[in-house]
Image (cartoon, rainbow, N blue to C red; front, side, top):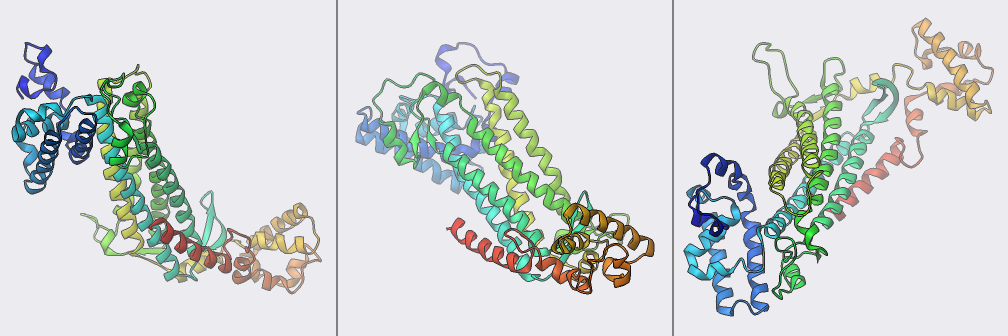
Length: 465
């Protein structure tokens, strides 16, 4: 890149060291902002015209030149390989001047790369937040489909990875549906804070040209303009918030993956993953590995690292813009890429698994998962819960010694521990009654779960427009 290709060459007489120039350049990654920067530049040109800085002819010439750049980039896939520009912003300006001549040199009036970068970054990220939210919605749809497809499937719920109480498979699916609903809410909030226009803040103090910032904001569909020029060019809260929201998405995806990895193991055999989302071993021909899920779980740490990197980068920076902030792009870009592909793969996994209902039902009826139900049964007989809890613990200990499940005990055996236990205890301890009894809002009773499924479907229609 020659000195003339820089946006700042006038002050300098010497040539930058080649290693430093390569170190300083960001074009290899920030070219992703090309379309967003062109859009912002078109709006800025209109703002300059409205302020009387450009003639209508000059403004139209600049706009047409910028639109030509978009068309050339779409047509020529190697368009960005034809230059060694410092960044995407200098690339656009250089190409514009080549197309329309010296009129292109007027475009940068009233703005700095500081507010230009911040504007393009926000424009680009605004669109990506919408895309990621839509991908979460697609995963939620896959969860609902799986829940409905195997509506009556039962599996053991766990605490401490020990069997605890039976739940419906649909209840498990809806648990993750809820997590991802919160993720979409968080992304909506980040979108609103991202959707504010910094253009017009210039380098740090604002601009002396009478550009109508609010008109430019309307042109770019921003909800408002930044209130302080110093803050506007040095703010990357929106980027940190975005990666933070994505970190929680990845927490949920990683937990989702871990559950399914366990359920697909030979020890559990609760689900079977199709060949579409599994791989084999290069040595052991019998293996069927859940690599899709393991990669999702692994990528979570990568996103956590980006969040830490952004926080660490910003924590000691003085106002206003500092070159350190160039490091924000790769962290955010990589987050977008990896969260996006992880969500896509997770939805594919959900559509390519089968619940082994015979295995899960058998597991849900073994291991004294109805012990709490026996305690509740005694409470309904006016036994204080703490007394009932102690009594049931003794019953379980006895059942273990006899190698029997609770519902396999005889009535006389139950009555060794409490005279309140009657013949109706066997009905109360059945799997069907155990599930049906959890009938409060949010519970795993079929009635409540089917209501929740309908509510989930309605929410998807609303969220997806």
